Image 1 (cartoon, one colour):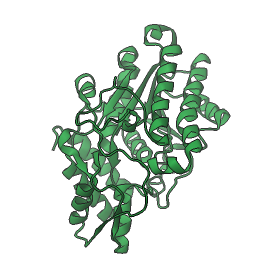
Image 2: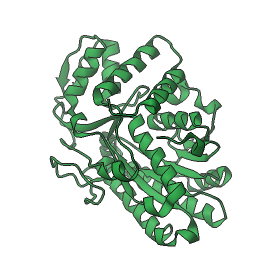
Image 3: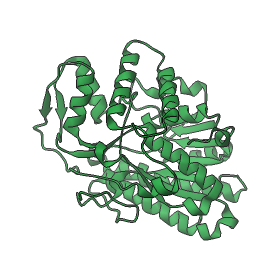
Length: 364
């Protein structure tokens, strides 16, 4: 369970706060009573969840590039955070083929600059105690196995995005060993961990090259839904599932740093690892819209066909587990979309779903 007493008045620095996951996380943190500072570029889509929920009015929002080392350093020092959650990234596989250099700059050097900024701040006497670096399930060397990857399986990544996230993991490991070593915790007082999550879906995502937003755009226009790899199997999960894991991990790092300064998987159970086509059909059937799935005839860059995570470590040591089955997640996405299209208060829809998630005890 999320401990609202712990989070009240905690200073939390979130990179990537203007993105889809970042906006949901900031709303949750604020609902828990945390004092949130965000650092990111302007939203990449219009509309965006960040702007629709007017989050810049309820938190300190710094618009800046994660590659701007000096600006990032100043932001960390000025905010003096208790906890840092790093989510700023170039998050798309296909875009990484088009912009590989920028992908590595953001995802690898961005991690270096963030960790170095915190290291310098701690040397100056600031109080940061926990850092969570959010990477990706795609950071594993994917052999297309039928079983889930564990945290000690080899990292790799075929494409620039996946490989850059594996590099971010290695940067995290090097900083943990060199500067935030658990064996020397009494000297530095910082717990550093990484989090690897699956394919995240939820209301409020308008990014390009993502399945649910692409489906909604096609639905609104009455067009065919173009699916690149309809038979690809993915670990789908509602956006609140991994965010729940990040919050549990951050608190555990803050309270017991050395024990939790590791890498952690957060993904769905096996019954929710479904094909792309299955998700499209379930989503569109609930929207009662006519649709036609059309495979892309263009030559497609390589993307993994099968990916699973073994999350037994998080379930055992963080007491984390998925709360919503994929069917429930799709129901809530449709509820969100219908509320948005009916001009309901988007932020209130999000907060309502967050409260519902907190009240859910068993997976359903």
